Image 1: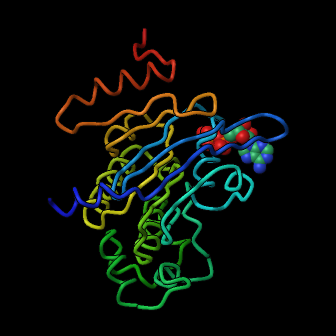
Image 2: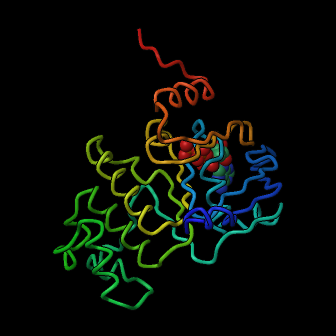
Image 3: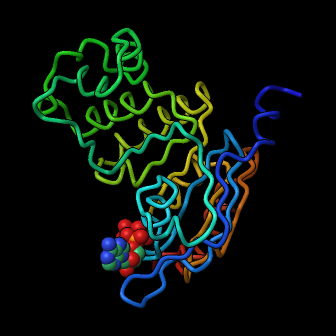
Length: 234
Ligand SMILES: Nc1ncnc2c1ncn2[C@@H]1O[C@H](COP(=O)(O)OP(=O)(O)OP(=O)(O)O)[C@@H](O)[C@H]1O
């Protein structure tokens, strides 16, 4: 068996019956989900459907939801958010190294994301795309088994976003973490992920495996239909 195939047989994330309510309103309603190690999963859903709530639960950040059911996740988890959350008073390399040692690894990670030469820059000197690259480098040095990303490219312009898609896919292929990517963007989900989940009414309404050799348009139309959106514009 190829190493990657072997990895896929071991679930990295396992959720059973995860439930979360806010003020009597149920947002997650008994979620069951297995993510095999090394799989790239995108999570779609309307605004307010509970995507970030689910991601926070998997990150172990929400004790209430964690206590509601069964949750298994790897020990080494990195989270990337829509804003890079770099500390403004630390230079780029020091942000990447935060809480870890091994300067060489930090430099390598910056090189991998295309920021070689910017190690001593301040966060305020970076563009939005560069800041997100630094945030990816910061997550890489921790060698995560699971990468959680909450709309990491949501604030970037369309061209930068496309370049970041290529970078993320390249990093994923090289390091093989499991990925759970929250996004609003159907195209982003189909381009990046091997599996796309649609969250609706507190449950996973659609669980779609993306086969790379098939037409992306087909998946796009199916996902838009699942989200109740028609693709045609007048
Ligand atoms: N701490 C909280 N207190 C009260 N309500 C909350 C809290 N966190 C989330 N909610 C509610 O839970 C619902 C789901 O929120 P969540 O942020 O998970 O949605 P989302 O799918 O990520 O939305 P978006 O795509 O707009 O970011 C929303 O209605 C939100 O108002």
